[in-house]
Length: 259
Ligand SMILES: C[S@@+](CC[C@H](N)C(=O)[O-])C[C@H]1O[C@@H](n2cnc3c(N)ncnc32)[C@H](O)[C@@H]1O
Image 1 (cartoon, rainbow, N blue to C red):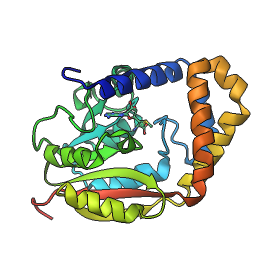
Image 2: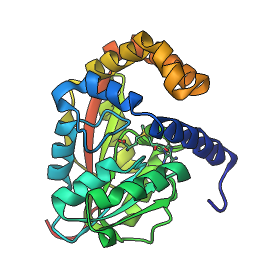
Image 3: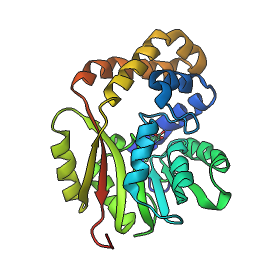
Image 4: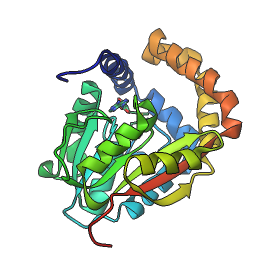
């Protein structure tokens, strides 16, 4: 990306390695499927907490009409936005900091929607590269925590939305999350429209992290030591924090437009 900061270049390299390693093996997806059980959306194959219920909630909260424009920011390998584009008959622009993720997502698009209805580009949460007011909805699943400045990222969602458009995103954290979410929405000039709880999200991560630990030898064989070590460090860091974790789907609306 032109004009990237050093932090963005490091993030892009980190996520390129993450997506390239996972794409070469179905093993990580199989562990997500085991942790989510019947809630696992196999066609989406997310590397996130995205389950069937989250997809249904996002589809309902976006309130898109057929033919409208959706941006999936932090789209990863594209499944979430592609599922929503197919379900809502929307046009999709998927954006991710990782060129590898964007390439993989683009190669998956034809399995969901006609070619003219989906495009994948590199871009960041804080600077998508989209023009002002060009989308009717934004979806952002398990990516906002990577923003250098979350209010700036939310303001960017607001900039690219048409008046009345909605941004639907996952948020998670310790107690006080609702207050933070409310303050950040206000600071970004967006209205807080809905907050949906995800009571099963922390337990899903608990099951997944324990699977990573239990299958550490297989993780090393499938992904190599660097990726496996990163996942095992994440599991060790996050497992003790899950008890106090709250997880939400937050819907923000850009003021103006119709109802
Ligand atoms: C946990 S993955 C989730 C991917 C996808 N949303 C899903 O649910 O499968 C987070 C994604 O955010 C992307 N990402 C991280 N920091 C970003 C940034 N600053 N701007 C854009 N994308 C970013 C990563 O490359 C990665 O694909």
